[in-house]
Length: 240
Length: 125
Image (cartoon, rainbow over all chains, first blue to last red; front, side, top):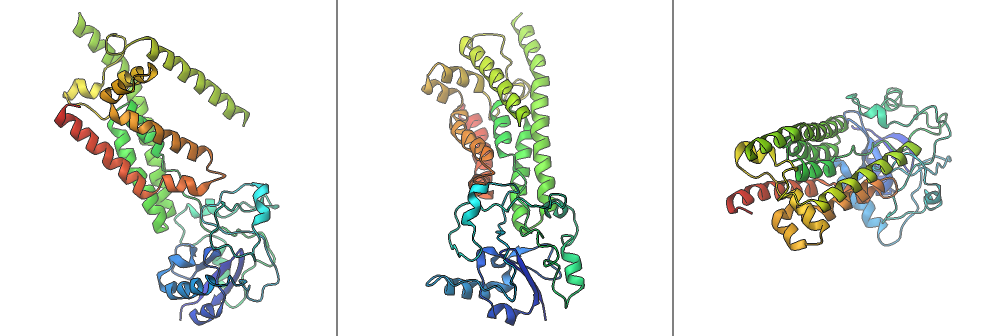
């Protein structure tokens, strides 16, 4: 039987069986799950095997938004978890991020609070490695029966999904329109890869393609600048 | 942060100088502007050919001529501005930035540029 770790609004619980998950009230937009075998945390509606739970939760949520009951956790962390959240700090947006206020249409970008323990940065950098699971997952899973250490370390990152690396689309377009060197077109192909890899959850690859597309743009600019004097020279020779 | 502003100011000054040059001189009649190396080497136009003349026409306020020289440039300028805005406001509106950088958008850009490259060489645009 597969068991799942659940992170709901920054509060982590598990391992839970599918039946236990079904019994939970799930706020789909703010719930992430991980089980052994998954490369990283994923939002619950991105896990195919849990789709019927998601469907049930969404059906239940539409008429009357229920309070997402946190399983046996007294500790409320007002940390929203959002895939594309940026790290720091738009304090004026925080008040709207009540964990119990269910917002089916969460428009504003939710940004995790500035971490008091600045010394321990949140997970995203670690996830750029090829490691199967982020570092803070591993111990949690190994001590399976005991709950993970969110209690002792309340500032465990609630955003397990790193933000997407830049696609560098703008720079590719600018290079193609102005410098007309072929590397920029290759960079554009890499830009496509960035997003598709990110969507698949392959963050390391996404980062790699992002870097490559940036390099393509740089090469294209350098080639463009270097070729300029040559082009001028040829033109002058042709005129004379 | 201060350094960033400094870079932006330098960039703005450089861009302004370039704009003045392109406004004052017509690339189609002056020998001082480099022609596209791709065109010189292969005889085929690249997606960016005509951009210098198009910029000159744009700065002179002649939209029709700019369109004639390089339609892609004219089309991409609003989009580039949109993308830059998305990048600058990424902190505050990450979803907007994600939307205009989505797979579909990048694919569309790629297809449009390729089609433009092909078609302008076939029809001589």
